[in-house]
Amino acid sequence: MSLELRQHLKLAQKLLMTQQLQQAIKLLQLNRLELAGALQAELEQNPLLEEVPAEDNGPEALPATEEAGEGGEAPVTGRVTGDDPAAAAEVNWEDYANNFDADFSFAREIPAADAPSRLDFVSAAPNLVSFLAWQLTHLHLSERDLDIARFILGNLDSHGFLDADIADICASIHCTEEEAEGMLRLVQNLDPPGVAARNMQESLLLQLERDGLEDSLAGRMVRDFFSELQHRNLADIAKRVGVHVREVHKAAAQIAGLNPYPGNAYSSDPVQYISPDVYVVKMDDEFIVQLNSEDLPQLQLTADYKETLIGKLTADSKEYLQDRKRNAQLLISALDYRQSAICRVMESIVRHQREFFEKGPAFLKPLVLNDVAQDIGVHESTVSRAAANKYAHTPQGLYELRYFFSTAATESESGEDLTAESIKQRLGQLVRQENPAKPFSDSSLAELLEKDGIKLARRTVAKYREQMRIPSVKNRRKN
Image 1: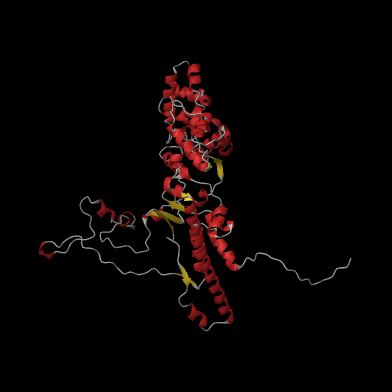
Image 2: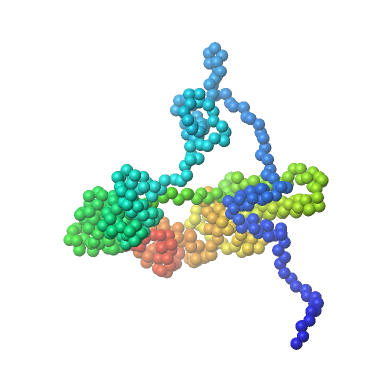
């Protein structure tokens, strides 16, 4: 068989991913924070792209708040008098709490505009380990004891539990078991109570011991009947201890008042706030969709880009600037398409889920991506990218756009499809209305749902209950 080169003509259809389409898809799937970062990076790299300057309205005249006093004296401004909270809110307290004061001076010179503030010297927020380390500085410990204590602090997890055992301490610090046990006991005597315990049971015992209750019924229940206590088998505990069940319930209530995770109160993890991409506002019985453009730069071509291209430049420089101009135009076009697509998708969601926006999550209807795609005339993948990692601020709260898409979980007796979310809302309502002394079992909940026209198997009710983190009937019973 010989090898040779031949030419053939072939006619085929395929999707051509142009640069403009690739840019639009890339921007569409970004969330709001990622989009702001991408736009800022493009502004820094493209010399023919700039941010639309904010309109300068000029200084506004301050309204007169006081009449001139006797003798023609001018009114005093910038001062808070009386107990008016509205007046106090106008004061910029950062001028008092965050000013630079490196050294005391009777002259009280005004510091430079770029002078650092007190807050600039704060490197990290205090956490559990730093709080415990601060307490250790007030104790007169040897270097060896401090090494053991620091190792213990370094092996505490976010809940305040010790993630190591005595053997690990001895192997790492080369100390005896007596020294490790002694320093562990010392750290456990620090605040908060229950810290440096090896499990929840030991943490609760340490807290009871701190209150002098280690020999009480509560201490015995935690020490000897912890498994039964977790499963709320209080009647069995009362029988085995030989006391009335009312005493066991009192002790259980006392234990419930303790903190099973003592380190959580000192968590320094930053709170991640969600900024919505769109707002849904009700105005005159109509829901209006508004894009959130706050903190997003408004882009335009550089005002003098034509003069820049006409100037005396080399051929390579002109070609580079022409390429930058095309990229800037593609970015602006893709950004407009992204904002328009998200707005159209949200408007379609509002049309399909109007009852949700008026009455709440219990009225969420089944909705799939294809329903919205056909409504606004785009491909299903476009709707998927537009809804991914995007959030909407609605009259019912803040929701991810994907929250509004769900298939039908079951059908009611009236023939209406119900989503899993609406069933969960009804299930949660039944649990909140139950008698704490006689909570509903999963079978009882299934029967109550069936009376409302929602037919579910007991195991499905149990699955929804677990997804909602609702305890079992045994753990919800309170006498």
